[in-house]
Amino acid sequence: MDSHETDASEPTGTDDLLPALEVIEQQPLAARAGAYSAVLDDLARRLESGPAAG
Image (cartoon, rainbow, N blue to C red; front, side, top):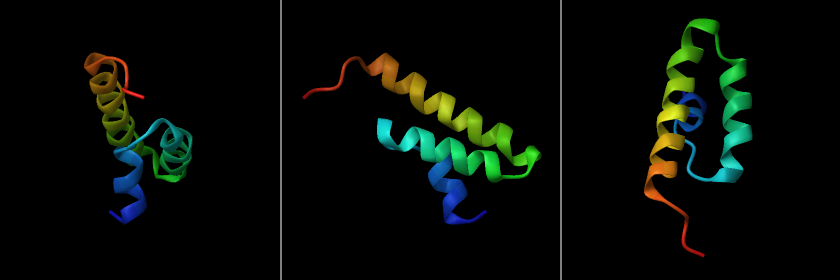
């Protein structure tokens, strides 16, 4: 796994979501499920934590 796959599975901000999804789409089909699951988990944690300060 290279650094792009790791970055794609752990987006750090809202601006990172689309680039992360683009990287995931470039991966072999078998690798996509895990990456999408990680994105989903990250988004769920963000929603549960409430609104961002700022």
